[in-house]
Amino acid sequence: MLKFIENNPNLCDTVAGSLNTPIGTKLSNLQEDLLWEVALVEPSVLAAGKIKPSSKENPNLVSSSDIRTIQQCHCDPHHHYTMHLLLHRDLPTRCQCGHWFLLVDEKTYEEEREKKWAKIKDEPENVELLKRFEELEKEMNILLAEGKSMSLNTPGSDELMDNIAIKWKEMKKIYAKMRKNMLLD
Image 1: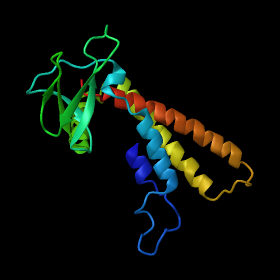
Image 2 (image 1 turned 90 degrees about the vertical axis):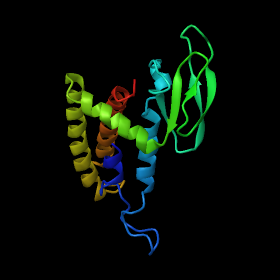
Image 3 (image 1 turned 180 degrees about the vertical axis):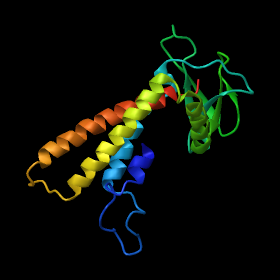
Image 4 (image 1 turned 120 degrees about the vertical axis):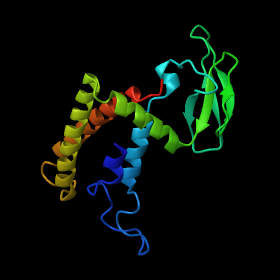
């Protein structure tokens, strides 16, 4: 999904903002908005409601670009509160309930998720999700290319925008399911 947004020529600005910035090297406002929407559907371990058993040697990974962050641990499903831990980069931290957490950079975290995806992508549910996602990506590129030459007053532009919105919503839904399946558990 990120590649679809960042590398899609149909979503790039057609005019450079400055003479020093070539077209296509800077994200357009549309691309920034779409990336923000995608970030909103990103599942978290806490949202999934489960924390895998862990040890100091095999902790639960937490992603952040910061060198320290706060992590919540819902120690017991019967508790109505969460514990908060201060995590430091590359330093395993143990919660009072016994769960271990390790703060890693986003690149390392995504590499681990990609390894998991490589293991599970051949499962029937994931094959179906990936196939539908690729179909939607092709359909969106066609619709976006058609829309490049349209203005708000062009006949059919409202229908095209509605169709793009429907496809985008479905694409986000499938992306969220795929990312949920990629959660490190």
